[in-house]
Amino acid sequence: MSDLHSFLVEMSYASLKSKVDQFFQSPYIVVIDVSGSDPSAAANINFDKLTKEGFHVIPVNPRLKTFHVHTCYPSVEQLPHPVGAALIFTSPKVTEEVVSQCIRVGVANIWIHQGVGQGSKNKTATQLMTDHPEVNFIDGACPMMFVNHADWIHKGVKTVMKWTGSLPA
Image (tube, rainbow, N blue to C red; front, side):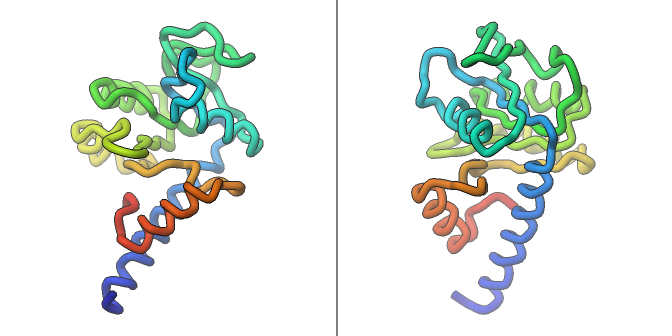
């Protein structure tokens, strides 16, 4: 790896790490599209891990009234109070609308999850975010790679993505 490439990878990672740190400073994090039928869904795993890490996490899914012991809200527009961060696990088909809702209600930090495959990424939603530089936007990757007690799989994936420069900027 050239010195320039190494430098650019480190700069990109430093920028991403700053965004991640800002995201996790939010007092409330909504996890959008938790699943009532699939305990192994990425949204559920992230919700549970963030809760265990001490974050105040709020579930969102229009098809559920409760998630675990928590009230589940149909959308970010129907939350009882403002939230600082939204973690999106929706189908890419609806990601743009969910991002638009988050912007309308003033969510300052938006993270579109991407695990294996496309995840929730949507080109139109990404383009929409270029019109909103005031929002701390993370377009891809998984928050579980950055929590304090990340499992070895997420740590390993983060390391490989960092080496290859494939983490979001």
